[in-house]
Amino acid sequence: MITRQIEMRKIAYVHDTPDHAPIETRWKVPRFLASRGFTDMVIADQFTGAQNLLLEDADEGIARETLSQLDERIHDCLNEGLRPWVMQDLFTMSADFPHPSLGTRGCACSSEVWDAYTENTLALLARLPDLEGLIFRFGEAFASPHAWAITHNPLACTCARCEEAGSVGIVQKLVENLGTIVCDFGDRHCILRMWDLGDDGIHANFGRQADALSTWNNDERFMVSVKHTQTDYWRHQPWNPSIDLGGPPRLVEFQCEREYEFVGMVPNWLGELWANGPGECGERGETGLANLRPPHWAGMFILPRGGGRARPLASDDLWAEMNVHAAVALGDEPTRDPNDILHEWMESVGFASESPGVTADLALLLEASSDLVLNLRYLRTYQALTEQLWMPSENWFRDDTFVPGACATVANAVTEAGVSDDLRQERALTTALAERHLEGAELAFAAGQPLGEHPKAAFVLDSYRFAHRFAQWTEALWNELLAAAPLDREAARALIGARLSADPLPPLRVLD
Image (cartoon, rainbow, N blue to C red; front, side):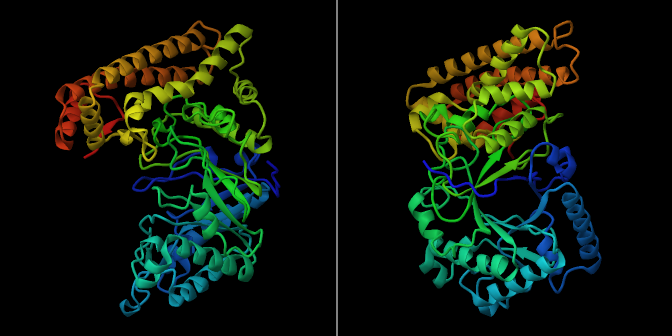
C-alpha cells in the first residue's frame, strides 16, 4: 500500500458528556498537549455552541463572554504552536428559522438553509480569524446549549427531495457546500466527521462512502475523519474498511478512554490493536495502522478523555495517558512495535523498576490488559451464537450502566440455545483471570514491593481490584439472570437493581 502523507496532524479533543459539567483535565491545556506531541486541538465543541453566538437573536451577554473565552483559548493555543479548531453539529440554526412554510428546518436540499448557514459560518470565521478551521458532526445532534438555537440532523429530514437524494446524496451536498463555504469563501480548513451505525450507513461502506465524497473539489483543506472501528468503539469490531479509501485527506479517530469499556477505570492497553488490528476478528497482522492506512493520510483525531454519556469515572487519567502515548507514537511511526511504545511509556511514568524482571512482568501484565477487558466486558458465548457486529454483546454494560433490556435478551438467547452453562463457565473463568491480574499488580505495586511507593501505586491497585470485583459481581449477576430466564426487561431491571442494593458496586448503576 502506498500512503501519500501530507502534513500529519494530531488533533486533541476532550469529549465532554451531555448533562454533566465539562471535564477538568490537563488534556485541555495547550502547553501540556504540545509537550505530548499534539499539533492541533479542539477549543470548543457542540456543547459550547460557537456558531450560536453570532446568530441574530443570540443573548448579547452570553455571546460576549463566551467569545472572549474563545479568544483566550485561541491565544493560548497559538502561543504553544497548536492550531485551534471549533467543532459544531450540522445544522445549527436559529430557533425561529426558517418559517414553517419552508418545510423541514434541517434540510440539506434547501437553498434557504444553506444561505443562512453560509452567513452564520462566515461570520464565525470572521470573528475568530486565527481559527485553523471548523469540524462538523452529523448523523446525530446534541441539544443546543442555547435557547435561541436548535440543532438539526440533516439525515433526519423527511422532505421529498431528501428522500429522493438518500443519505449518499445528502452527504454529497454537505461535502460540496461545506467545501465552498469554509475552504473557498472562508479560506480555512474543514473536517467532516463520518460516523453511523447499520448496514445501510456510509462510515464503513467503501462504495457508498466513495459516492458520498464524489463531490469533493480536490481542495486538500477539506478533510474527512473516520473511526478506526467499523461501527463504534467496541471490540469485536473489524478495522474500518473505508480507511484506505481515496479522495479527501483522511484522519483516523481513536478514543483513549473507551466509553463501552470502563471509561479509564481499568487498564486497557490498545496499542497492539491500533498497530496490528483486532485479534478477536482474525485481523491481527493484517489491519491496524501498520498494515492499512489512508492513502491520503492527514493524521489522527485523538480523544484523550471522555466519550459516552457518564460523568468522568476514573480518579486518575493514567490509563488514558497510556493509550494517548500509543496513538501519538503510531501517528509518528505507524509500523513501530507497540510493545516498544508501551515500554517507552512505562519509563516516562516511572514504571521501570530497578529490577529488570519486575519491569518485564509489569509490561506483560499491561499488554494483557486488552484481553482482560475483552473478557470482562464482552460475552464470547453470545458472540459465537450471534456473530454480532452492531453493538456487540447487546451493549449489556456501558459507561457506568447495566442495560437491563440487553441483559434479558442475552440471557434468553443463550438459554434457548442451550448454552447457558457455557456462559456461566465463561464468567467464572473471567473472574479467575481478573484475580490473576490483580495478583500480578500486587506483586509490583503493593507496599514493600519495587513500585510500592510510586505515586500511582494506589490507583493501579484500585483499578485491578475494581476489575476483579466487577468480574466476581457480574459472574453472580449472570448466574441469577440465567436462572431466571426467560425474563423481560422489567424483570432483569428488578434483579439487577436488587443486587446493586444488596451489594453496591459504585459507581455503577442500572438503567432506569
